[in-house]
Amino acid sequence: MSQENIYPLIPILMGSRSDMARAQKIGDALAELGIEYELRIGSAHKVPAHVLEILRQYEADPRPKVYITIAGRSNALSGFADAQVMAPVIACPPPSASFGGVDIFSSLRMPGGVAPAVVLEPAGAALLAAKILGLSHPKIQERVAALQAANREKIVADDEAVSAAPRS
Image 1 (cartoon, rainbow, N blue to C red):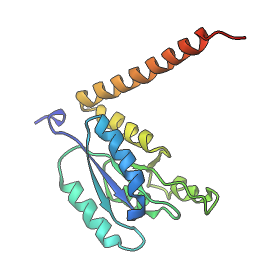
Image 2: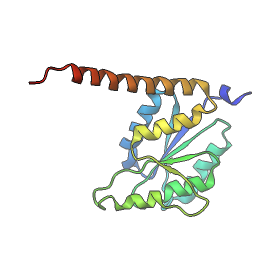
Image 3: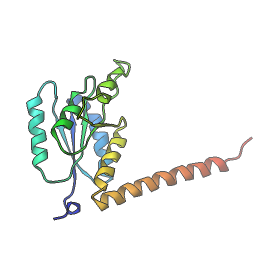
């Protein structure tokens, strides 16, 4: 069976339940692209064995996948997951006002051999995952192309509306 006949999956792994709103934004963007996703919770700091078990289950699943991780402050989850799986990992850390944004560096700096991508906007993380999966799944590629075309058309329509408005 070719890989394009096996429908992909995006596991969204949160560090805690407080990440649910961000995960849902990612899920909503994936749903608009017709991509299946699952939400899971597991802290690399507090329950690493649980996270390993979640990852083992997903890695045993033959479907193509891209993982999206959501963890803030000291983001061990993204690097921990990336070091355990063969599929790409996209970190989408939540903003943190309490640390003035400095905690983002825990998502940007990873040890050698660990390379999750970092995308700060939830819809952007979903789009990157879709583009990756679209490389081997033509229907997803078509949906991404349609989304991009709609985005371009909106900009052009907005420009036409603004440029046609009378000026005083």
